[in-house]
Image (cartoon, rainbow, N blue to C red; front, side, top):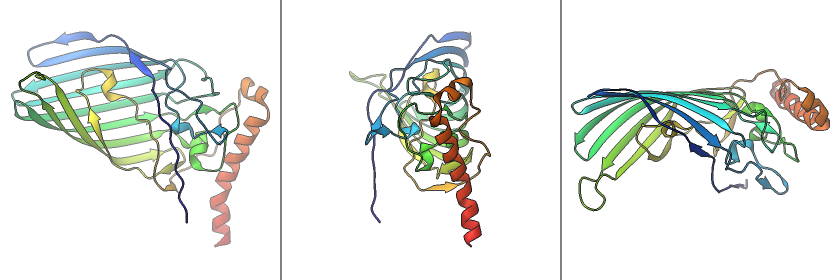
Length: 268
């Protein structure tokens, strides 16, 4: 059996905004960050003339509001904190005809400093993300789960283990380097989903909302059925009805996807 792979690369969306101090003491800090996201990431990547999977586009394609509130505390070698982050899409759809779901993300962490230059941390992360609304306004496939917008979104529980270092002296004094392994613990998706796998990557200190950005999931694993919702692409608005056949094609693809498991059971 052969294999197939494809990918995209480029700049993502740009996040900017102020960090406002709400309270500050010797051993604690409370901060509010009303951030915004500009749609600088492309959402029109295509493969062989048709739009690639929704999850492989580099941005949201819409202006988004990213409010967050962060609390941190410390006692001797121990530090802790929590952050609540939201992502609100401020436009009905992007230039490619769809809109990503809103996001709620809650994280909490504890870190222990072994020496002045190194510490280790553990954290829990909960993410709730809505389904994609709308559909591509050009040629696109319905041949695999990531091609169908109702297969996106869900609730995700992750556990992270990290190492944080700081250069104690020399010309790079104060430079911070961090890395974290984020391990999925529990996942509740809206429909067909990929098998969740652990991820490793660089991290940044939890000081602003940008440190708890929405996870962009680009699955590279086997697909399997988890839980399905009995619904089509979405409730069709007047704009969808004006699009005509495209909405019908998406709804037909959804019906075919739901019919496959029943057909397999009948065959058995």
